[in-house]
Length: 369
Image 1 (cartoon, one colour):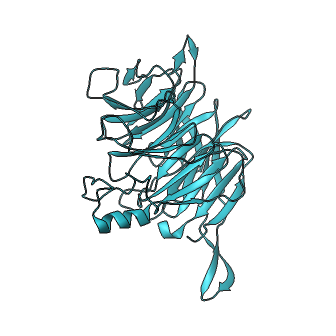
Image 2: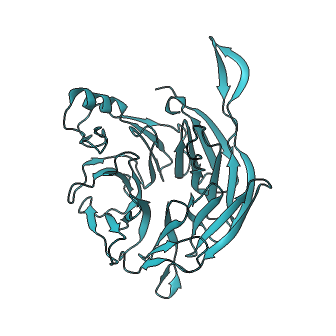
Image 3: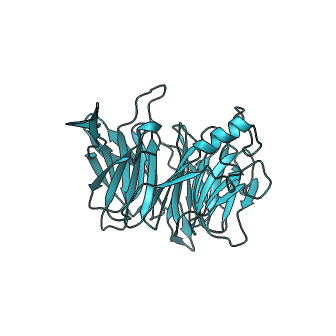
């Protein structure tokens, strides 16, 4: 595989979360704006950046022009109370953040004046033992529904413009909820510090989960989760021991694929939104990995073997039954390991990651555009 072009931008703050602004509906144009949230600073920030287009340096490499990545340009920034534990775009111009103070904030980006400001706060959503505890994760569905999870094991459903939560699951979990992901409007996945993947159905009048999945008896904390963009029964999680696990939610209890991965905590896992045979992970050990199952996908498709069960579209998933496959290719994308790589996001052919070394990495992967 061709090595990606890389730009490294020093930003003088530890980046805990990084997210691309979503594309406009029906648009084929790749997003050029992203947001970062910092942590472990005297004054943490939410920052909006524009990724400059590729630059022709004027040289020639055979018959092709040599293209270089420009560094991102800071558009605007705003102060953030506490560490930014998580963040996500609710709309094109609204960004939700989770805070270590136990609150959720909503920021608005004014695109004409290039200004970002906090427009709403839900304070003290997460409390344990009478004290505020960190809000650890967020998930959004559409433009008017958000969920927050915290160290208190609560899940709060929020809606912009409403001061009080729409609904609170007081006893969703007995331990820390580390990540959330919507499967459908009424179904939500969580991962917790006891190593469990849980499915909640908000149509039910109960705080408890509809299903509980466990990876191993070791109960390594699960730290991140992402759903397959086309096959909702396929879900990937990363754990405290660096293991990548791919689950088949149609199975009653056990995951389908468990792969040894990083040497330390896996902070985030992401399927490529348009090429789901590609997956990306980052870790506390300073590594950023690209998992390429495209060769295995071709093998499964051509042979018709039941190694990848079919999804709703009739296509087989290459991520199920991968342990014995020689066709899975794993590439390290950062040669010189930094401090912890805390967050990543992929949009078209551009991959972003934020680190504790106070750098933003932008990687160009044109074959995934």
